[in-house]
Image 1 (cartoon, rainbow, N blue to C red):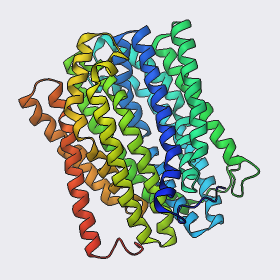
Image 2: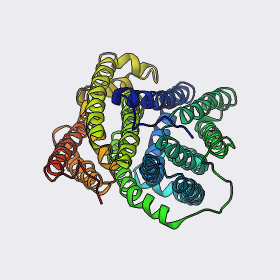
Image 3: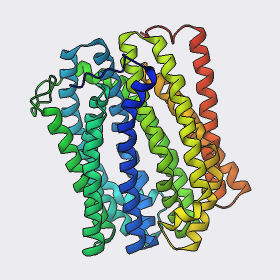
Length: 448
């Protein structure tokens, strides 16, 4: 067990020391995702890139619930770690292990069975439909590994260990790149080779994480048995995790609706958005890493009753995150054509990709504020409020804005503009909620 607690020492140093491995892990994830698309785009073509893009949101949606459960696991484990209750942590680990296996098998079965139906609902063009189905079905084999890795990493990060998830994801990322080279370039297996490479790499990363939790040198270790499951801890995890899962699924569901509109613009626009979403990850993943750090920091200090420390940590996190995001956004914005050229030489795809970046990148700092405020409430155990705000902003506002913007711009700019609009709505609502909670004294005391 890592004893490097986030409840002690300098606030800024505690957050950065914990954040940097998560940030490196995110950049590694981005690196092998980018390499994945570069190899597919260069050696298979724009249609293959579009097929992967059409499948990506379905994958994200299907694991969204368990990503929420990973957040719930992080919150519950961080609270107990802050209280120094090792017996509770042992039970949480066993409960998460058993739940993750069952959930992973269910999600995998759903994906294998309904892949053609899901892709048809998204208006996937007939030219790439079968390719997308093949990719998605093979990728679905990764679901048990992805879910177990996320849940296990949530436990490790809740106990101040962000280094080992980074190490295991690094191994998985390197294996993914090697697999792409072998299966796509040398064996000419196309998108099926890319999906199989992902399956192998993610399964190995999950296995490494689980065996580390099982390590005999750990005070609190995982036992590879089906004993130790406790319903009370699963209920607690679900109380925090289900709203977070619903929030993640709502975001993805709204993106699926957007993808269905994107798909109607044709192959070049689909490919442009697919490449843009990979480029965007250079900004989005560090923000997500910051959010994970905020949840663990707030969760531990909430469990320890250190509410002033939470306030200082939030101020530092938002300022640091906004500064980082503005720099990255400007760097990508001013070099849009060159970055797009990494993925494709198709001039139409590059043109559309640059249009998307010019609309979204200047406003990406809003997402930092949203993520930090959102994760602060989650870390305190207030899961329902951020869920409600996200559902409204990223579903109701986003979809309404989509149809309004398309009335003005019948091109990619109309779709791209809805992202900063929904981020703005979410930030305004979160600031209003935080102001109300402050006036009621609910952010300076434990929430029952």
